[in-house]
Image 1 (cartoon, helix red, strand yellow):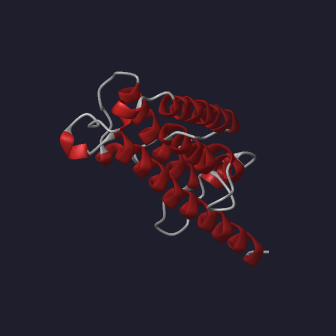
Image 2 (image 1 turned 135 degrees about the vertical axis):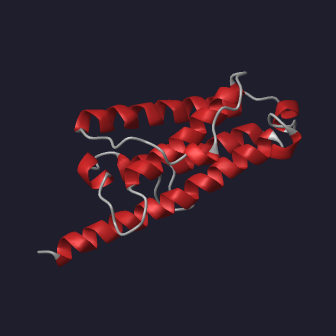
Amino acid sequence: MNTQSKLANRFREVILDGTWIANTNFKNELNGLDFKVANTKIQNLNTISILSQHIHYYINGIKNVFLGGSLDIRDKYSFDFPEIDSREKWEFFLNKFWADSEEFAELIASMTEEKLNSNFVDEKYGTYFRNIDAMIEHSYYHLGQIVLIKKMLKNAEVSSK
């Protein structure tokens, strides 16, 4: 298996279907989650909805570069999203998240070795490989937060009964 396929599979593991590293993935944690729970604020933490949209924001921004576009995403905007205020909007977002993630993985898998080792947009950002690897690590970081927030919400619900 080539490096591109390995990276694509690692990305799919954290977002779509894996359990090897964290024993879960974004899709497993978010599918079936009520939009109200996804928007519930715990102390000063980001909501599950905001964290999910944050990861999707980066996936889409990097995917745009993979497709030949410019790098338009900015860290300062990566948490600025309107609240998803209905089940329909939450389901729409999730379906887009899964579809964009699969397309992202397919683009990784089809990359040439030369492209994978070339500079991503600008030398200061490192290589495509480095950015893909960082996207995977970044996703695991926020997946862990989502899992903990869900546990905190469940504990708060049990405590209030």
